[in-house]
Image (cartoon, rainbow, N blue to C red; front, top):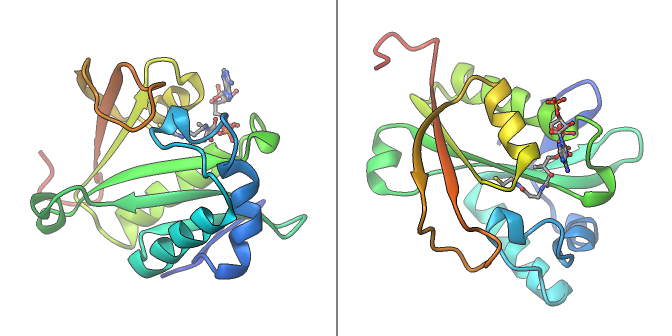
Amino acid sequence: MKTIKTKRLIIRKPKMKDVEDIFEYSKTEFVGPIAGWLPHKDINETKSILKQFIKSEDVWVIELKSIKKVIGTISLTTKSYYDLINDIYELGYAINHNYWQQGFASEAAKAMIDFAFKDLKVQKLICAHDESNVASRKIIEKNQFELIKIDNNPKYSSNKIKKVYIYELYNPYRGENK
Ligand SMILES: CC(C)(COP(=O)(O)OP(=O)(O)OC[C@H]1O[C@@H](n2cnc3c(N)ncnc32)[C@H](O)[C@@H]1OP(=O)(O)O)[C@@H](O)C(=O)NCCC(=O)NCCS
């Protein structure tokens, strides 16, 4: 897994030592539920999820250079075999609520989109947000994703997800787009 560096962030492979930083925000009501997942009940739950992240190699942690602390995650995942063989990946991200509104998710998302298109050469990225999630909508829109579907009956473990806006963005560097 490649490490990606931006002005303020190191986007790198997760390590077990990141568990406390990840638990700090994953246990709250602020971060998980609006992204579709439930708050972690205890640090053991975070540990087991972190083990899956490490194994899967599709989730990176976002480390803030200035304080050497993990303040979130960013992921590129495939939802199905069809997506896998067609190089279609879903972009996801979450930031510790104590670090919101400082442009960290925007900085990480831009770097990851660049990495996905230029290095991984993926064909298409998907990204989605609940209708109430203004911050995520802004990130998606400013990266020129195109709205393709509104899901009025989404099925997530979190009841905060009511209506999901789904977007796509084709790789501008690949010849065979669209
Ligand atoms: C979505 C999330 C990752 C954004 O993180 P962030 O670091 O605060 O995002 P940024 O600071 O880069 O802000 C992105 C834009 O949203 C705006 N914004 C951020 N939080 C906002 C809020 N609560 N209300 C309104 N606008 C907000 C910013 O001003 C910025 O606007 P701009 O593009 O016009 O400058 C963060 O809110 C989060 O972790 N939410 C919970 C998990 C989640 O929703 N993940 C995405 C699943 S779809």
